Length: 367
Image 1 (cartoon, rainbow, N blue to C red):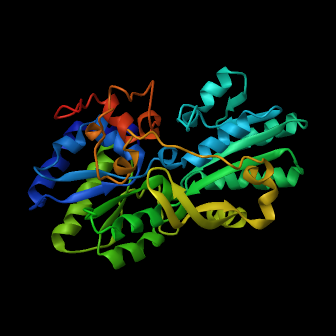
Image 2 (cartoon, one colour; image 1 turned 180 degrees about the vertical axis):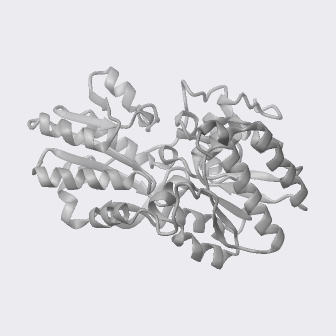
Image 3 (cartoon, rainbow, N blue to C red; image 1 turned 120 degrees about the vertical axis):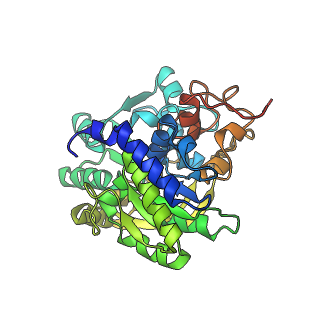
């Protein structure tokens, strides 16, 4: 295949669905880890076309959604400082903190700017040497190499006015935390292709072996996902538990070693809190000691914060796949993309936003 529309061919999609129905002998439960995959599954209605009883469990693969509330509140506190030029990807601006969001701060006069790459923030720091330029560095392993390169470039330029507020998270520890939960229903995983393009697929092999779960590295288009689901079901039906690669056009077993080297040079593994889930050991990245001069959390005194989640939001249960967005009493009424109570409703990869955008409604009254 050469063109994007080939990965959306309805004839091939029907063939894959027919093969899936012939293959599945029981209602398997498969989790897609990536929020981008969730949006494709829901937008295209794939989750509703699967064999009777088969269920896709939507996992915690939205980097915006799992950024802890404390990090967001720190971001607001830093962005509100006089003389600070605060930068972020656009999808973080409307994510609610305890009291406000970055977009509202900008409306009140804070210098909050959308950038398209962390290197944009480095260039702003070079152009504004008398301003403190801060970049909100969040995401999974996918965005970590670019953030690492930005730190290395800032160090080479000798910039003393550039820093990052870091809240990176890692996929494998989240998967093991889910599997260690005695209530876990996941029988196979679809792993995120873009994460594996960076990190490879070797780090998933111990998980598949330890927990006896198939893991299929999968792309993001409808045919990618249908093919990945079929590969996972074939493993489940035959009693295998291996790491397979559906996304062969982008992923190699070893991944991108140059990107991995940059990440290892700039960051180190640390415990990390996940919004709605709690702290997971060794599940995040922080700046290594030799680069802590670029750590905004150390540079700015933003301690003493008391993050408070909206009590009506069930984001944690949604992120772990225990509940669906339509189970939430506020879904589509008090919580909408324009006025979100939690990150999954505002993020472009959030499960609640996916359901709302696809017009999914509760099957029962949630009033």
